[in-house]
Image 1 (cartoon, rainbow, N blue to C red):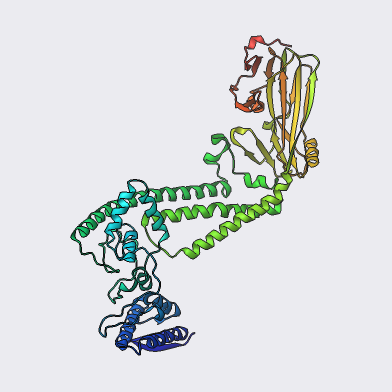
Image 2 (tube, rainbow, N blue to C red; image 1 turned 180 degrees about the vertical axis):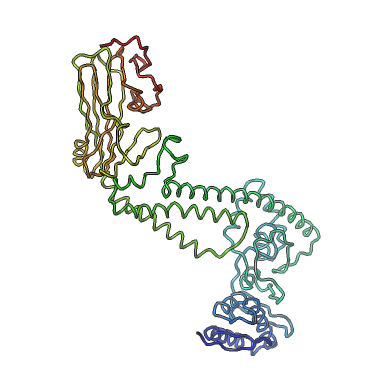
Length: 528
């Protein structure tokens, strides 16, 4: 335990630790050197010691031990000896003059934030003139912008030293003066003790008007901030709750594939088949930090807006920012290393032309998704891309697609397209060739699978397999069942753009017209 020393300041006994005592001793010695040999200097030194005793009492109380932080805080309030000017009166309170003058916001004379009060103290002018100037210029759209900029840029003159910098030698430190700025006292009456005195009755009346306007503005601002704060808190809370429900508890609810067309609850399991399994925990942790930290900050800012409190959160905020940036950087590094595997994307296609185009083409599903055994699934909106995960066999089953377009001639063509990604183009081509998808043509029947797979043990590489079917005008398509499982919910137009289609549930009979596929009547089919 550090050694403590008993000292007497202004007739009051204090306990102070050894390090703080050395700093205080040097400070008092400098004060003595500054004022000891000037007229009235001893009284000035006594006043300063009394002021130090009052500060120590307010900070620690008689039962506490004065620490280095208390001494340094006291020095920041009273100021350093080199900033003091010699008092000319033997009985007057000490007068301090800053060597440098700087503009601050004045906490002793404010309507909204103390900008005009600070400018008035700095220029030793009644701030009502600047308030009128800002109101007039605000009508032209300039004053409000300049005021907000000054509000952000100018610091608050909280300590005696800062107030001396703001008002120069005209600032008088008083033992009864409140040296702590409280940003919640927005409706307090202005004080004219920071370097000038308002002697104009008109000026005082105008100030009162501005104070009344300031009170109204403050009330409106508080209501607005409370509303924004509530929105921030709800947004952050619900976002974190949704994140936890989806990725931790895997609770489907409104996030299920049935209700919103997108399924995220198994995304973390799907990651094991995309990236190196050793990277999955890091991606999960870093992604959680990258998402949750901003939401927590949003909640904290919202609470501050609602309750309008001030906290020493600079260090915590800085640490949180550093952690968030590091998590983003970590995700970027992992994403870059894993993303190399998707550097090149290649498509391959195999086309088959039927020698005799049937009037009615039957489409039958051989391997169906309904017959699959899988534990988890992952789907994008509208079910356009669905992945079914079998953890037991370590296999992925991916939904294939079927598009139907009008042939530009009288022939029927079947084009099978495969797509994969790889580090190089050659690697991507080899991956497309390895995709397992079965289809066949037997007479007037096209047999297709509703899904395809990749070789066991191979990572997912943005794989996609589909059949483009081109049939002449007048050809009838007869599906074994509801065609939506194959046709999904979209089709491609001539510009190769995907458009919403109107595949009707339960309608398995369609005819190709000049305008595209349309529902056909049952009696139009020529039965085999």
